[in-house]
Length: 137
Image (cartoon, rainbow, N blue to C red):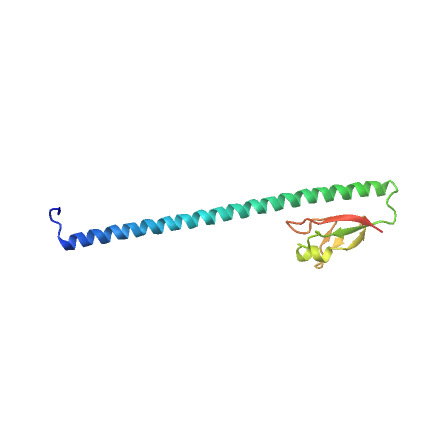
């Protein structure tokens, strides 16, 4: 059954229009899927970054507290002859600054010194630092 005013040319034009609309819809769906994946990736990266920064903040607080305790003990006459030693992460996943500081020994009240001359009393040396310090002879 043919529609009124449905010439072969008009039918062909309607088909092309429908195909173009369908193609645009498919392209839009593909773009939406890609955008969803990209958004999920960015959210995952932000979450991982926040977790690393939170862990670094905890490590920094623990290191500052440890240093304060050692200084308190030292003021009372203890810990004579001991030095602090910078310890990088056991997995070796360290930034260049932490690699440079790893193993460095300093007196209890002296700062660790980075390659560029920056002075640090305790870790962290970088935003995602997981280094610690310990006592050594």
